Length: 88
Image (cartoon, rainbow, N blue to C red; front, side):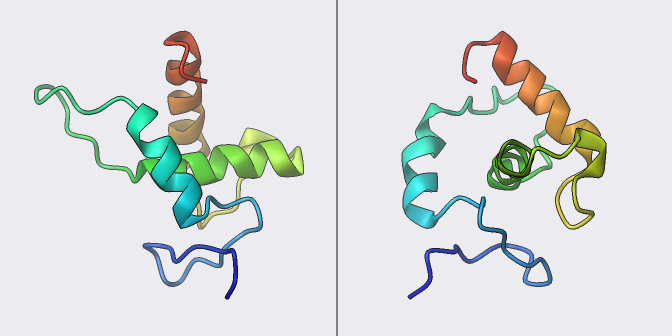
């Protein structure tokens, strides 16, 4: 069995930097939950983390994220927000 996780978007190829299901189960409880008001969360936080880990592993620039991952502006926005909150 492969270490690579099953992904929500079946058209997206999995990358070696993607979170496995076991890793996601460990990390998920530490992420902030929606507060119940304001703009609803419309992105998959696992895909955001996969994109952050892709940048970290490959050393690519944010703007050069593959198109099958969330937009780099969204990914970098979450990265900055989590960094300010001390999560990252």
